[in-house]
Length: 297
Image (tube, rainbow, N blue to C red; front, side, top):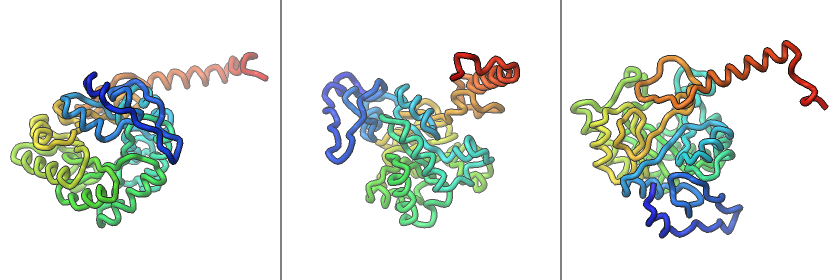
């Protein structure tokens, strides 16, 4: 995310005088002197023409693994509704549930920037509601930023949040919370709608969003958006011109089966590994092999 020159020149982050201070630096895509990934590191990546990685996380162990692997941004997504709680969509998850998942992720990570989704129903009524919900995610969930779905209509909300000291990642394109309004899972921003997406991104960044995530957007449209705004962009099904890329970790690691979205690449087959381990455990218990003498007090 940074050139050797910028890494060498960046001053080390000092320990906070009112707490435990920053965690020791780990290997990854940010300067070695940076104890934590901050929003300005993502901005520097775009300025330098470099990339960063983002994965969802919902518990302490995956957060720790991804953090130690050098993943720069962890997203506590409302996709926990689908991928952890077993709901069909992201709509049922509550703010209280998001806070629990957020607290687990922040407990497990030391260096990554942790961003939490504002779930459906927690911000739409007013900027005041959005601030109240975001404050809970930051105070109780200990996240570093929030992500909010919606276009230019929500620019005043983004402005209110940032003025309150809450960093905001905007989310445009296909917005899962609006799937019923959008008519299902459909690519957004085709043809003449590309300019509307650019306009949304410009309005949101002018309001203070530090990053714009685009989901299920044609690569050409995503490139137009990225060129039109100065802040970094993150893509999920939006081509490779964005500064960052994000995937749901259960998709990325092969824990979930079935038909995958076109933009998903699986880097492992965790479902097979876990199934084999559970099958072997069950067989050893039933046969009396486990526990053996070495497992017995």
